Figure 1 (spheres, rainbow, N blue to C red):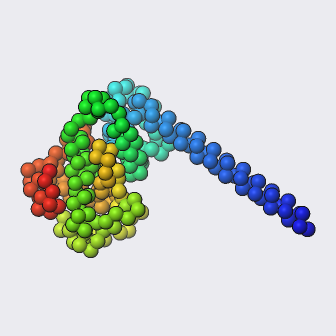
Figure 2: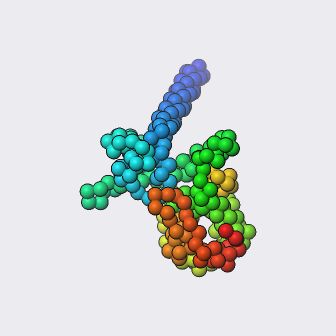
Figure 3: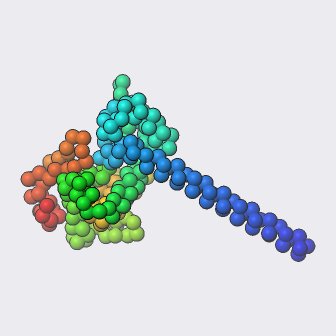
Length: 251
């Protein structure tokens, strides 16, 4: 009886180990597949340009990747199958964008590896405007984005909690004054806040639903302006004054 029980335990343990090994092998293969998809030069350029949070046609993405429209469509089909991008049809056109915010966060984090390149290469490839103020998918990044997050912490509007931020009562008062409705953010599966590591500043900026709403508010109030076909954001004269008043920062 005891021997039989021991044999059963050994079989269960062996099956569990085999199952764990299979799961690890599967996860490894999935990682290799995703890395290969993102690492291909043309696809990497298209993915990088989708970081501005807008949707683009295959033809537009073909231009930024410097490939033919047919080749771009083939690359996008692979990204669609991997659920890295989604497509929406409007009339005769099909518009591609990231399938979910987590894709943008992962790409922004990968960009942080470029900060370890040589200073000469960095000066040649990074635009000062992009590092100063840009959109990271649907929220503010760059020096301005980091300054805003730090100012909100200093004013005790938010505080770090694991990989997100907790919004205080005084914080909600501040965001409400900016036209952000707390009730609209509560019943949503997407995280309310997230610390997104800024690849150029190497510090976190505010992401998640709240980060997206903050960017929308600042665009609507004409504090910031977009540049066509670029992630760069222009801080307006009005925006500089309002950010000094609201956040206590000089930009």
